[in-house]
Image 1 (cartoon, one colour):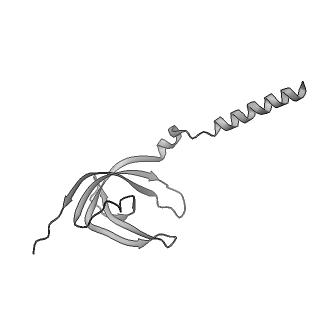
Image 2 (spheres, one colour; image 1 turned 45 degrees about the vertical axis):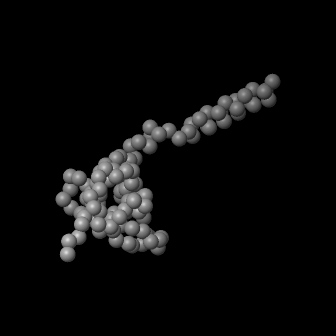
Image 3 (tube, helix red, strand yellow; image 1 turned 180 degrees about the vertical axis):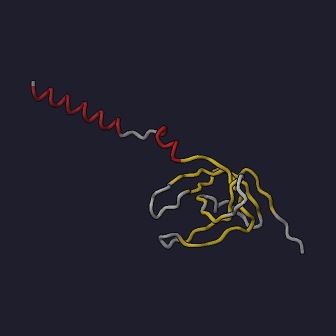
Length: 121
């Protein structure tokens, strides 16, 4: 009888432990937001990550900012074309306070608008 009670108690404690470890999206929503970035035409510059891996940096600014900065945009390499200005939607992941990680990471979501510039000679 004692062994059966111990087995039932152990089963319920394992059940509570497993359900307590579920991945709940409601706790992760406050770690990122969505926003828009303007990407300058011909604003891609190649560089290296802290691990020595080649990465692309893009000249960007937020829609409410007049200041340009260079930032990585995960997933944007596959759609970027020279001579094109972009307005894109990005997921902004905040990593403030973590060492060796940028404060903000941009993840490409979709193109809102694109304008190809023509060069005149």
